[in-house]
Image (tube, rainbow, N blue to C red; front, side, top):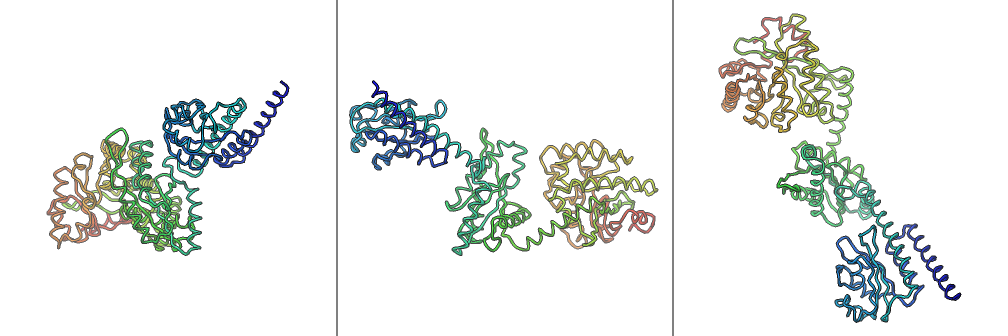
Length: 615
């Protein structure tokens, strides 16, 4: 009895020692396969009569040999990728049943019918397999003992298996946690693509190799056009689904050696080792092509068509490290956006200079706005039938101390890109209303003022509420104010701009479509939306006296306005001949240097007092 007890004590000590070795290997972060190999070798050292095996089970129910140090390699190789099932040997059946399976004689047991020749060819006669479960039902592996003669498991073997099963659970759980930590650290949570951290590591290696081997490399920066609209209108869940589809398509169009990463939002980066700038542009065109097919949305027949604007950079010409390449690719991508989107652009060093200039203008514009260094000039609008003043248009002007007068077409786009446009628009509207009130207090009878408002502000601000507050503050009637908007806003199908335009109309504020006919003209919005005025663009007026086509187009616009009860104002009138033609066509009013150039408030008052000012 004492000898039996001593033997059991020694056996338990051996098992405890094995457990310490395996747990130490797990704690040290050794690979799962190495830990399982250590476990199997430890078991076989304690029980030389057994051959130990660990098979991993993937999420699709396929087996993959993980450790089997004493089993023939050809036997393990034959198991690779097999399905688990109700009659697939000891291991496949144990995984299927989620319970241990002990086969004492492979030669006669029906569970081994399909695999008996394989086992017997390698001298295997019995097998006891135990599934490794995480939680209550997730089978991740099997732990098996093989014997070379028909037999059952000895009591010592059963104690070992009980301990080894727990060790396997700990090792597999630790491995799963490690892989999840790695995924969170190095991969994007939505698309599963490498994130910025992993991209930086791969780029460092790829660029170092390119430097040593004197081979090219390239980088693409993709921005998904109008992705924000998908998120805002369909929700973030649909937006994530669209991103997954895009990632899958892009990945399918690249080589195994390329890296596709998601930086966040709607930006993707492609790292192309061994690729010249010209070849990179061909890759960019290929990536744009795979997005041409509309993306299906789950749960409906709806589809969305997405496009990409792409910036292309080459190493080392456009940058010697990832940060510089990303910066320059971003500049090139921005140029692709400016070119109309859905296209690719090479980085050019002139773009960098243009960016520096834009940044300088942005900084100076912020200072000018905060220090009230901007000015408003006003251009008269004259009724053609009796040459009377019917209003003025407020025009923003900026005289910088270093750069002199900066034209609006240079600083307005910068304001829109930098987010300054809302503050700028609000300031112009406030100052225009204040100036109209001052003129009236001075006895200068200006009938009303027109102010340009950016489409962006209608999306991001409450223009109607701001106009209502300013009219009340300055003691003006709603009919004293006209807001000029672009055709792009009129064609916007989102509800917020439409609702604000309707509120302005109900207040009595006029709505004018600026530069009518130069954009995406559509007669339908003129009928649907509360437009009170059309402005005939100066490009139609310039050659009225010499170009029959311009006369026909101008006459058509004027006819449309009159038939819909809208006034029509011609812009850029510079000659008496242009004025007379417009008058004969029935145009209501006009503005241009023939009547008066844009002028400061005091200049407009002087212009009004001069009886010969109006041509």
